[in-house]
Amino acid sequence: MTQALPPAPTSAIDWDSLGFKWIDTNGHVKYIFKDGKWDQGEFVRDSYIKMHVCAPCLNYGQECFEGIKAFRCKDGQIRIFRPDANAKRMIYSAELACMAPVPEALFIEACERAVANNLEFVPPYGSGGALYLRPLLLGTGPEIGLYPAPEFTFIVSVIPVGNFYKGGVSPVDCLVVDNFDRAAPLGTGAAKLGGNYAPVLRHSSDAKARGYPITLHLDSKTHTNVDEFSTSNFVALTYPSTSSETPTPTFCAPESPSILNSVTKQSLVQLAKSFGWNVENRVIPFTEILENRFEEIAACGTAAVITPVKSIERQGVKTLIGTSKTQAAIGPGFLRLFTAMRGIQNGDLEDPYGWMQPAQGIAPRHEA
Ligand code: PLP
Image (cartoon, rainbow, N blue to C red):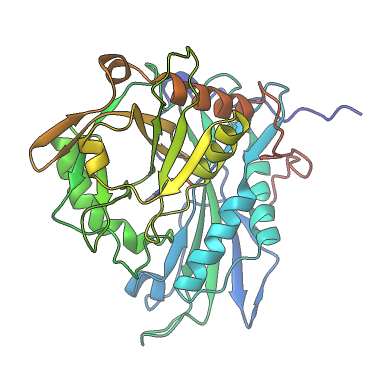
């Protein structure tokens, strides 16, 4: 039986000029955890939330969040990319910040419900845009002492976002942040807590003003090994010296207890393995960058999938990555990964891993 198609994208939005900025939609879904259990949740037609002034999320940063995308696929159906992986990561973050974890099934239901009530805000197939989902877990009950909140609120809001690469995928310059540590060695760097981000803003904003769109953090204890970028994971490719026209790359990612377990990176690793590439998850000394051991380096994350890096500057020393070709355009290895990943997300390619949350259950609801 063929499934009914969801409503078309609204004509109220100019899909070609969409960026990454808040746009009011129909609303968000909200669930409350109280007296040891989660409620049934509701759809809220508002962009504002009301909470107690003593909410620990406001006073002590007891909160965590996620970022997910939903796509209008080639067959017209709308699918969410790997919400189960984000659900698992939010459970990890919640435990670290002493919050009631959102069970995986409830997390996925909330994502579906948020999309189902905002179907007309999912950008058109082929536009390069997506519906960005922002799950948010907050300690909201009143508690002025340093104790966990007696009540938690779980929200999923949505924002239509545009094609990250309107002018094509172009490599960027990166700056190493040496005067600030993003994550302590036994700290919370592997969790998606809001508190990990605010202190980085000053440094990433300074870097942007100086012409570096992204910033790289090294391990806090020794400042010798690569950790991750401020909002994305570090990934790199090496190629064997061979006369073969199609050498098999090795996909390298840093092993560190202080970095976020990027869902994009997990997916790229699976794709790289499916191509027959080697995958190395290991400590990556910064000296390997200085010695230009990587033919291709990129940042990876939900927003852009892959952002190639053409140079990395540390304490006034700028290292060019790869060759003049990979400094001008995305290299062949990352291009192959990017194309495969975007192909699966758009429904242009088969999804052998079951990454795309199928449309079952995503029927327009428009709850009151
Ligand atoms: N690392 C950090 C610090 C991030 O904020 C993000 C973005 O969520 C990522 C990595 C990439 O993770 P994902 O691929 O799950 O979006």
